[in-house]
Image (cartoon, rainbow over all chains, first blue to last red):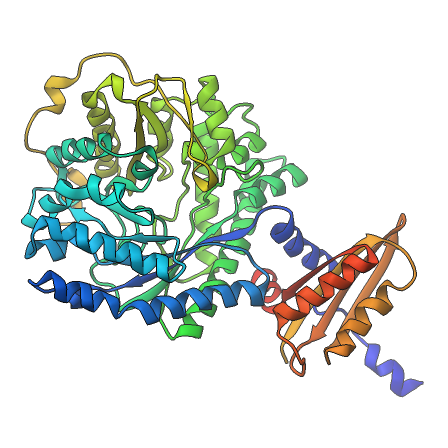
Length: 457
Length: 90
């Protein structure tokens, strides 16, 4: 009897029931999942002045894409965690088009599309260029062909980095980007964005591309967990701001750890370096998986009301502090996205008028959503859209932040809704201010790099 | 040792523990730890099981246990232990 009782001394289950239930609830009821596992690949080694050679060499990526795709499926099966999308990021097409003709860009676009489709990859990012201060042959060719390349594909995404803290803002790149999106189908314009200070290792599309200074290949992970944070706040109803901050921080820690687990598992499985976890909270159109829902859980009746920015800033600070404790591999945008159509509460509030363009601009000062997944009416013309993008990108260089614009030009009037389905959700066409800005947005040149640039000197 | 956490929840009735554990035994999965309770007619069980000698993969085991759960009219969830180690331990 004495020998037997020894076994029980100090015994407790390895995990408490509360701990197990917490994790199970997050995964099974609160939509905690991995938004994306992204394989970032250097394709610069395939560069050639003969497009046939480039296309042939790109074919050599098939085995690693296939291996990656299977490894992601295996990780989802093994851990019982949902992984929503598989993505690949390649070196910006701009560099290929420095020597090739712009028409060759379209052939490479089709090749990338096939590589993705053949290997069960949901999105492939890289029809992209850098043009913050001016154009090269390559960046110009990307802007000449972007609409056609994106319209004729389903999985290819593209990004124009038109502003940076270091180089300023190139107004012509903004105008040419707007020309492109006005020629795109709504579903296609959802696959391109214009940015300031794009990071080199984003796992999210359309910003994903294989950046300069990165290793040959790496695995970058995006987590999605706004539902978990909202439910934690509603369940615990914290009574002070510090309690609220601490609760979000602890929850963000757990969300990020899951990202790190999956990233490391895929990376070990295929022998590719683990790159980073993007700490960003990313919503889905599903009810209960909304960033705006968190703000409303904090005590703002309708997202966009006064106090929203303060609540969002507190949320962001706690997410970053919790997330950065959870991983030493922070990357991507690592803030919050509030793509209006992809966030059920946001699109509702946009329709009700609580969220307009200026609300989104103000919120961009404390997160990196910029203006994301908002419809605009083509009837309002290009000038106002160019002005809107310049506002966002200028905020990016003034605050030294990653910011972007992804808007969907449509023929419908402001106030209408366009359903893009799936993860993209219902796009609300928001009204641009009806005043003439033609003179300003037609000015050539660049907006100078700000005083932030001089701080680095 | 490679462990998984099995969580079973549903209306209480005789045979739930037996049904789940015999499915585990059939596939050579050993129970390391088990905790079970019934509250207002709802049965809840948490098991830590060892997969290292299992004759099938964790995803096949998940499918089999979920099929068994359907028979018993209870919900069965199976996660790899590492998920809990990553999220609940520093």
